Image 1 (spheres, helix red, strand yellow):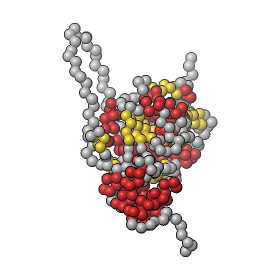
Image 2 (spheres, helix red, strand yellow):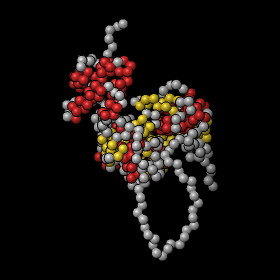
Image 3 (cartoon, helix red, strand yellow):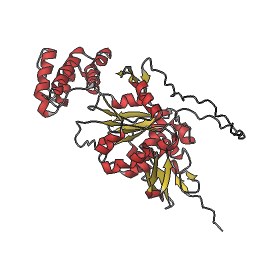
Length: 403
């Protein structure tokens, strides 16, 4: 005789207790509810995934990060910064904390229809038709990212980049976006895929951050909380591995079986649990070649059949009303960088920061900050480029004499 499994208890925010189904997993949406409760309890405070993980008794920060991304996609939380990633509550966060909420996960599934009874196979084979590829409508204008900012598509092989990436997903061709920090790799991926699940890679990323790990509940029991890879596979969503080449190759290898023909992984830490990828599952990654510690291994490169360079669109910078002199400095330095004369050149991120600083502290302060932002070995060349564009010598932004 088999003894029925005893339900376990998963931790919940604000002292509530939620019964988990047999097998030890949290109920669907429960982790998002707990995260929303923490945001509600600390309304107005910007919190990192690690802050929230600590508040929930040491849950996986990777799982917390995915819950925050899902809440943000549904409008139940707001991302306030990217490095480090921070979030805060919105007027609707309390609704998500009251009960698990449904989060957008791509195209809704069709209701299942009853099976038709089998009919005898005809003696004459029916005429065959060639299946047609799914139609991906072309993007014709700016696309809104999850944070509310507009993304302006660029051309990629004659198509808007957002459309091209969606076509690659339809064809199951994994894409690697590479280029300097601040050029818009994350922006185009967020604009292309509304069902994104993100892994923020760094040298400390572990296998547990990707597939999940055991978490202890207040009553001393342990439950396995699945990570972002499993969530994306089960829900047929896009997995974005940002800064993938900063993750140790031996750790990143856990994703490979999901990307090849197997489309399956086995979680050894959870008793050899097998996870199969649902239709729609797709992997896209970001790579910063010039960042210290970034390693594009042969194994990783071979998994991404298409590799797309992303550089700053200086024409877009001008359209965004950024000071033309700052854009001129960036173009000048970008040309020198391409020729190997310097290592650094301002990208769109730095130009946007320039304009914000100029609006607050003035143009001289913004130009001085641009010089101070440059690596020390390139600073003299950057200062000369600023002097030529602005017609005067500008010092790096620094504190002056006591008032």
